[in-house]
Amino acid sequence: MSYEYRPYEERTALEQYKALLKDILENGQDNPCAMVDGNTGEPLFTRERLGVVTRFNILKDGAPIITERDISGFYKSAIGELFGFINGARTQEELEQFGCKWWKSWVTEKKCAKRGLETGDLGPGSYGAAFHDFPTKEGDNFNQFEEIVKQMKERPELKTHLITPWIPQYTIRNHDHQQKVVVCPCHGWIHFNIINDKLNMTMYQRSCDTVVGLPSNWAQYTALLLAMSNVMGLEPGEFVHMISNAHIYSNTFDTAETILSREAAPFPTLKVVNNHDSIFDYRKDDFALEDYHPKEKILKIPLGV
Image 1: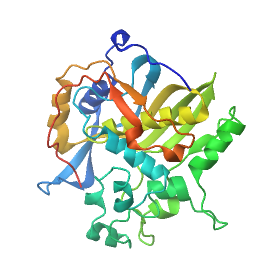
Image 2: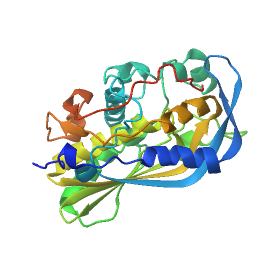
Image 3: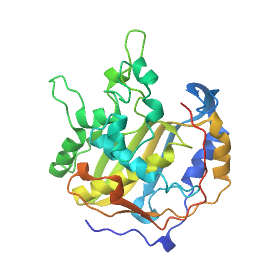
Image 4: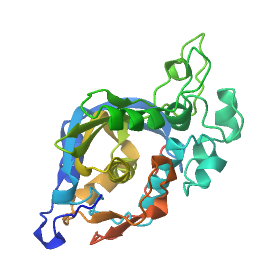
């Protein structure tokens, strides 16, 4: 499928990211959380805003790769992570084969043992398990992406092109039910809609760390929309991102303020440099950034674990 972005010089700098951070800082509610600072071990809290929506017309405005700080060093890892999940990856070793190494802090021996898992295993309730091997009462695993592509090609008019990352029996945690996932899926409720020969995608996210995680989420799901558009032979339309709980951790308030002090540039172009017939064949190096003019990197952003 051939399609073109609006020329970079005709794009306008958009500030949805800064507007979101500002809204959370000024109007959010503080709430305790179970996380601690990865460096100091100090307890953290979050400032939270409920029900946030952003929309991107990719070909008109560019790919939502943030420009307030340079993320060129890790955006491909985010893309690799998502395509790893689509292919069923659920261990640190499998994700590293797709170019994503940042799960190490979550799949330690201690964290995995707490959930009855082998070290390095994200668990049967993780993204890869849900997307590729969703359990059924019949006993056979269900590959959601494989079946949704078939459905979209056979019945493009349907409004049921929906994928879920949530397997309730592995994510619920109470006094008599052990959670079977190291981190309950935060993103990945994906709804495709085909309208006027364009593929549109809404991604619902239950929980979003807007300083650390959101830039990766926008990059990886933009890549998914572009790849799926190619597989379907359609032009990419809108990417709508809906967040239930958008938050900033207390140890990254200063980082958020730094980002707010910077001027945004127009969004860049995210190009698919290698087309594939199957969504399962896409990898991080099938994508490349052009016209990316960000501000400098922000190094050593404190993390919560």
